[in-house]
Image (cartoon, rainbow over all chains, first blue to last red; front, side, top):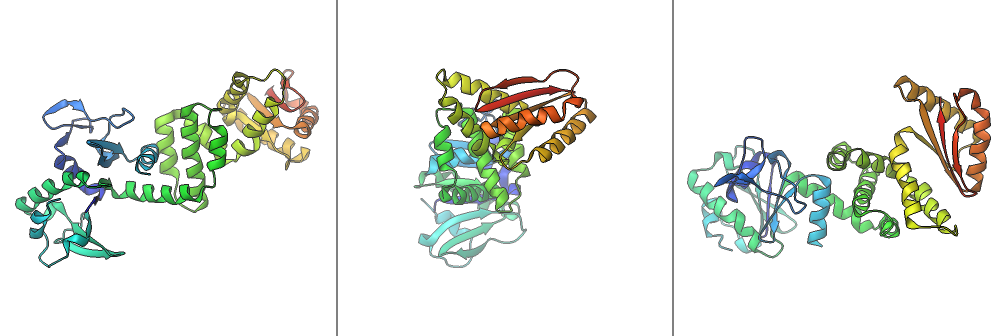
Length: 77
Length: 265
C-alpha cells in the first residue's frame, strides 16, 4: 500500500500522525517546538487550511495550491 | 510495511496484498472497504475510532512514505494532481512553453505554465476561480496579468510574434524584448491589443468603450499594442479617428513591425 488520501476534515489527524502540530496562527509546526514552522520545498510556510500532504523524500510537506501541485507533479514524473 | 495493526480496523477478511489506499474521511461510520479498478481501499473516519485504532492508524500513515511512490495527499489536491496530469499529457502547450524557455524569467515561465493549465481547465468546463486565486496569492498582480494575457491567447498572438519581429531587427537584444514584454505585462489592465480580426470600426468602438470604462474609475490613460505592418497601419488610422478624445498628443513607439501607443484623455 502506498497511498493515503484524506478529506479536509482529517487534515489535523494526518498532521498529528507525522508528529506535527498547528500554531496559534494556523501554521504547521514541529510538535515539540512551536517556534519551528514547517516549510515546503519552495521555502514557504504552510497553513493547515492549505496543507496538501506529504511526499517521500524524508518528509516533504506540500501545499494544496496550484503551483505546489505542479511542483509535486514534476517531482513524481 | 507492517499492516498487521490494520487488521483490527476491518472486521471482514481482505487480501492485504491488494490493499492500495487508505482514505480518511468524515462519515461517522465504521471503517468499510471499497474497490476501484482492482484496488482495495479502506475508508476510515478517524473521529469515531477507538484510541487503539487511532494509534494503529497514526503508526501506519507515516510508514506509507517508505513505500515506492509513497504519498499522503488531501482529496482536493489529489484531484488537482490527476487533472493536471491529464491536461499535461495532452501536450497541447508544450511547444509554447519550450519556445519561451530562456526568453522569459523562470518565475514568469512558471506563471505561464500554470496559466495555460487554467486556460485548458476552463475550456474543459472546470471551475478555475480558486486556481487563479492561488496564482494571485503567490505572484500578486503580475500573476493576475500574465494569467489574463494567457487566457486571451496573447502569448501566441502578440508576445511570440513580437519576439519574432524584434529578432529580425539588426540591433535586437534579449533585454530589448524583455523591456517591451514588461510593458505589456504591466499595462494589460489598461490596454487594447489589436489583432488582424479587428476592423477599424470595431476597434474604435472598443477603444471608446474602454476609455469610458477607465474614466469611470479614475484612469485617464489607455495603451494600444499591435504587431505586424497591417496592425501598425490600422492603429495609426484609428488614432486619427478618435483624436477628439485626447487631451494631448499620443505617445507613439513604433517600428515597421510593431507599435505601442499611450493615449491620455
